Image 1 (cartoon, rainbow, N blue to C red):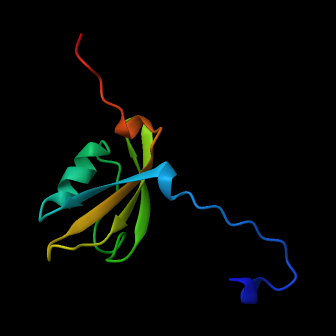
Image 2 (cartoon, rainbow, N blue to C red):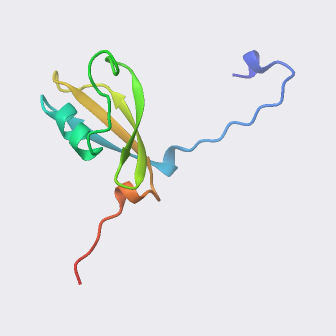
Length: 93
């Protein structure tokens, strides 16, 4: 990185610990994410081809959906900030 920066000022911050990843894999993963987004997500092959990344609103949270797979089926990685509403659950009293 230093070689490419030259004389410019650059700050690099590792934000790895600020994010969580949830894998959604399987032949119906696209259907699940479209339903979870209230039908708003455009996740067809033309809009979200393999290797692409799109933002989705799920409930009150915005997540980044990366189309990848490790299981030989359709799959997505959902990235969310750790303090996001996406990762919070309601507890019954």
